[in-house]
Image 1 (tube, rainbow, N blue to C red):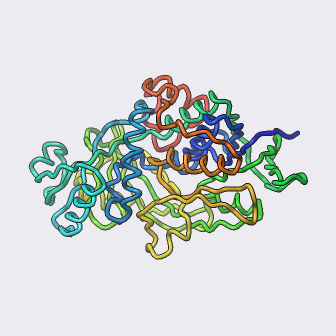
Image 2: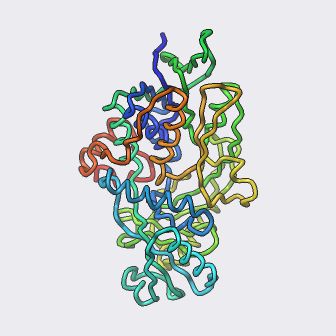
Image 3: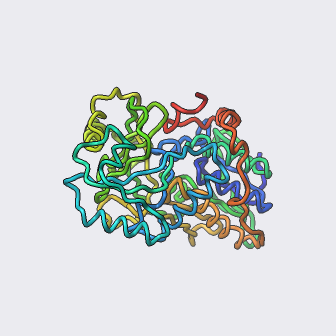
Length: 406
């Protein structure tokens, strides 16, 4: 048995459902295939959940920072129920480089942010438990995003516009079929109907290299793992970023009655089988404890690891920490009709999907504009409805399991 469609999308994380939504709103037939029993099972559901303002990337990747700032504002408009407006602080401790702080502050201004500089007493009014070793800081428009809600609502929008969303549909092979010009592409699914399409989008995140290989194409991936540690620590207030060169344990994210601490960056060879080391947990707690000294004594509620779907050509020369976190849309000469999307951040998932949809629609001769930045997601401002969609799509992930349905 074979299903026919125009575009098959492989991967049910934020980027995959974003691509399905964007294409469907342009009138393109879409079938999304996710190997897990539910959506949001990979990178998206295992993030630290920061809605980035762009400040983290302003000095190293100003274009990416501008994208973050714009998408931050867009998501607040189209999906307010998926966002907690926590705000953000970049803080410098006394031992941190003051020149780096000034460069970061200037870079934020240059990308269109309006950071507010604070002295230690002003910061302590906002974050009472912060370190006595505090030197200075500035305010940025960070927030907290709940990926389970965002992925489920995006999938619901895609479905409302005609997309088929299939979970428990692991792809086993991809090959060309027929003798047309161009040839159609068959996507074979284990224990389920195959899908034949004019184009295939590989949005499999850290597994994108394996998916490309099924079609006879090469895609250099360099995934890294990072640990997130959720501790019992209510009322932090804003997202706290330590203002120093990227390092382990430099971010603390408010999450209801908990704080999520992150993170490490360790290269992995196999995204399905990688080590989870105790030292990563301890280092993250200790380093974040330099910002909030009471954190190391807080009860650990849960620990989870996420994988960054980093594109190897972008990561060479960055010493293992691809702070740009840019994304790439890759067309494969060895597999005509296949396009892969790799890298990126949860905050910019809609923009990534727009870039992929523009590419695919150009190849298909579809002349319809993107509308996803203007159209609100289903249940956009209704947390209860959003949580119903999360359960319907099986999209609960460890990143926000403490919040969904509470």
